[in-house]
Structure formats: C-alpha cells, structure tokens
Length: 320
Length: 132
Ligand code: B12
Ligand SMILES: Nc1nc2c(ncn2[C@@H]2O[C@H](COP(=O)(O)OP(=O)(O)OP(=O)(O)O)[C@@H](O)[C@H]2O)c(=O)[nH]1
Ligand SMILES: [Mg+2]
Image (cartoon, each protein chain N blue to C red):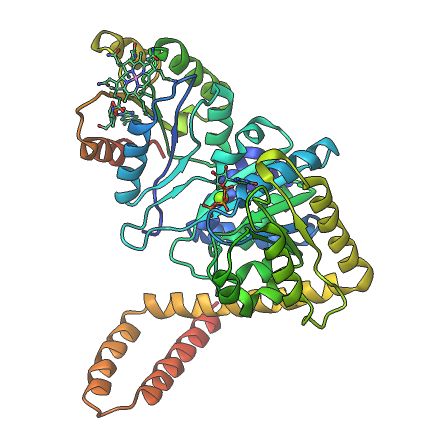
C-alpha cells in the first residue's frame, strides 16, 4: 500500500489508474491514501463540460485538449456516462471522439459509469480528479453525462463550467433555463454549421442578461467537427479561470465545494454504516410495518433510527 | 454491483466491421459489466494505452479483417512490455479460421470466439477466468 502511495507521488500511470478503480469500488485503502496525499492536490485547473446528450461534448473536449497540448500543457480527462439501472452495466463511449489522445503521454483519459449516482457525475469523480491532479496534470477536463436539468454536480467539482448547447434547442432551452445561469461560466453553441445558431445565441444572451453576477458568461459559436472557433472558446475558458483567481472567487468556490464534499462524505458514511448494521436493518423493517399500519409515524421512525445509528457510531469511535 | 468487471472492447486495425463488437459490448453491459468502447480502427498502441488508463480487467478484441495473426500477437507483446498482461484477460472474436486459433492461444490470446458463439458463453468465460 505504501508502494502505491509512493508511486502516486511519482506520477506513475498504472498506479493512478488503479487508484481510480479503487475509489470507484469504495476501497477504504484508497480513501486513506488519498487523505494522506490530499495536501499535494489542488494545483490542476478543473474544467467541466456539460450539456444535453449528443451536443458534442466529447468532440469539443478533444479539440480543446489538442490546443492545450500544443501549448505543452498536460491534461487529464474524466468522461462520465450513465450506468444502466437495470443491469448495473454501462457502455462508456466518449473515447470514440478522442482516439488520437489515447497515445499522447501528456494526456490521461478515464471513462467512468455513474453507478447509480444522480447529478451527472459518479460518486468517485471527485476522487478521480484528485488522482489526476497528483498525476501532475495541468488541466483536468470532466465531461458529464448528457444532462437534462437537475444534474448540477459539475458545479461543485469544476472551477470553470463550459455549457455546450446546440442550435434549435428551442423548448429545451426553456426547460434547462432554471439551472442554466448558475451552471455555465462559458457557453458554447456547438454545431453552428446547422440552421438556427444565431437564434439560439440570441436566446442564450437574453437569458444571461438577467444574471446579476460580476462575470458575464461569454457565448461562442463553434463547430467542433471542423475545428472552428475552438481557439476563441479556449481563451474564454482561460479568461474565466483568470477571473476566478484575480477576484478571489476561486477560493470562495473551493470553500463551497469543500463544504459540500464534507457533508456528502458524512452522509455516505452514515448510510453505509446504516446499511451494514443488521440490527438497524431489522428496526427499519419493523418500523415500516408500524408506519404502514399507522401505529407509528414516519418522522418518529426515522428519528429513532437516526438516534440508534449515532449511538452506534459513537460506541465505535470510543473503541478506536 | 459493487465491483463491476471493466472491459475494453476494441477493434484493431483497418477493419470496418463493427456489428460484432457492438453486439458483444451490449451483451457485456447487459451482464452488468462496464464496457469501454473506442470505435473502429485502433492501433495496437492505442489499445494498450487505453487498457492501462482504464485499468480494465478484460481486453476483448473483435477482428474480421483477416489480419489477426499479425495484430493480436503484437498487442499481447506490448501489454507484456508495459507489465499489464498478467492482470488483463485477453480475448478475441470475429471471423478467425479454426486453423489459426491454436497459434493465437500460444501467442497469449486466452480464448477466441467465432461467429455463432452465444454471448452467454463469453460472459461465463470472463467471469470464470479473470486474472485479478
Ligand atoms: C456485414 C458484413 C460487412 C458490412 C459491415 C457492416 C458493419 N458496419 O459491420 C460491409 C458491407 C460494410 C462489409 C464490408 C467489407 N467486408 Co464484410 N462482411 C460482412 C458479413 C456478411 C457479416 C459480418 C457481420 O456483421 N456479422 C454479424 C456480427 C454480429 O457477427 P460477428 O461480427 O461475426 O460477431 C459475432 C462473433 O464473431 C463474435 N465476436 C465478434 N467479435 C468478437 C469479439 C469478442 C471479444 C468476442 C468475445 C466475440 C466476438 O460474437 C459476435 C456475435 O455472435 C461477413 C461474413 C460473415 N458471415 O461473417 C463479411 C466479411 C467479414 N467481410 C469480408 C470482406 C472481405 C469485406 C470487404 C473487404 C469487402 C470488399 N472487398 O469491399 C469490406 C471491408 C470493409 C472494411 N472497411 O473493413 C470478409 C472477410 C474475409 C476475411 N476475414 O478474410 C467476410 C468474412 C466475407 C467473406 N466470407 O469473404 N462487410
Ligand atoms: N454537424 C456537427 N456535428 C457535430 C459537431 N460536433 C460534434 N458533432 C457530432 O455530434 C455527434 C455527437 O458528438 P459527441 O462529441 O459524441 O457528443 P457528446 O455530447 O459527447 O455525446 P454524449 O456523451 O453521448 O452525451 C457525433 O456524431 C459528432 O460527430 C459539430 O460541430 N457539427
Ligand atoms: Mg460524450
């Protein structure tokens, strides 16, 4: 295990890949190692790429990363695809658009299934970002699953979020409008070779007019497949990263996301412990019956379970 | 569910036949596996580097072009050179003449699945023969 830690510190590719696997599989050893190495992370610039299914997120990532590679920046890419709720399996196909990058020693691409996690990322994505940070990547790109409207995980994981739209979304824009302002730091209208790009551009601009923030998200029309507008889009992303640093907003964002991360880790732990304890499982089963028959109310039932869990946790730590 | 098997389904060489690869990818997904699919026309180096970055348990290659005797052993050699062959179960399928199968096995391909093999057979084989 110390061996793995040592190798991660040295930026070993296989160790990095294995670390991400262990994180995905909830291996407690991975958490311990990552905890020890946490202080070395936080150097990479983290860019999230989100938007509807098929908008061109992977193709755009490929093109953006190729420019960064010309600038001799190293890049980690995490591409998340949905896991089937029925089989637990998945087909992770984002790499199809990034084939040239596979053999570039300055690029590390990892595909992840959501494994039941809602929100557009997988539970292990934040850990994977740290692993790639340790691997020494200057930039880390995270491609979310194709989002509908409630998948906003990317906000708390990335420094800068690129929202990818396509012409003619029409009603869809209305649908994702609710969350859209808060999510996108930079907007790309991809597939601008198609009809309606200018109209979509206007619609997005109109919406952004309502945002009351210091940073006005820029909107860029691009054609990923023809490499059009990519330089300008990358500049806009860099501008936003610079703005975050200069305004002090970077620290604010990272404080906010750390807070969410801590809360989620607590929640996960509580749930895991809850699910592991036979006694608590039995309680829940028994209470459910009582709740259904109106002999107990669900609020009281959950209170009872919670109290017992906390007591059990406390006992565990006293014996530590 | 906690630890799904990770598989790279790859199409080595200049081979445009992708139906079989897609059928296999879907069958493995439906069996609860995480399948990384990289599309057509992969070079041996692309396949090996992807297998490393994705830390897969299985490398499943589909080849119908007739170039298997050259490509597949090359890929095994590269996996060995990178020190990952001992951890990855390497399989192949597609149009591969019976006469060639033993030679491929001697070269380090664990099993070869030709047309007509039910996908369930492949799923079972993978589950029984994982290296790690
Ligand atoms: C459909 C087909 C095509 C389609 C392909 C469409 C596509 N997108 O896939 C088209 C028309 C494009 C095509 C083109 C050509 N084809 Co063609 N094609 C076929 C055909 C008739 C069926 C292949 C197929 O899709 N089968 C259905 C799928 C589901 O089956 P499968 O791929 O065999 O996969 C199954 C198993 O093999 C196994 N499996 C496959 N891969 C893997 C991988 C793993 C890991 C595992 C576990 C299992 C597994 O599981 C699958 C499900 O059971 C075959 C003949 C045949 N009967 O196989 C010729 C055949 C493959 N083609 C052939 C040739 C020569 C060509 C061309 C060169 C023809 C030409 N001169 O232009 C071109 C080349 C195209 C290219 N760029 O590579 C030859 C290959 C000869 C050889 N290997 O020596 C064949 C064998 C025909 C023949 N008898 O001559 N072809
Ligand atoms: N016309 C046109 N097609 C494009 C453009 N960019 C990408 N595409 C095509 O759109 C399709 C989807 O592209 P991807 O990059 O896979 O899209 P994605 O958003 O990553 O898709 P998911 O990950 O499945 O949500 C592919 O067929 C691309 O070739 C573009 O600028 N113009
Ligand atoms: Mg994609």
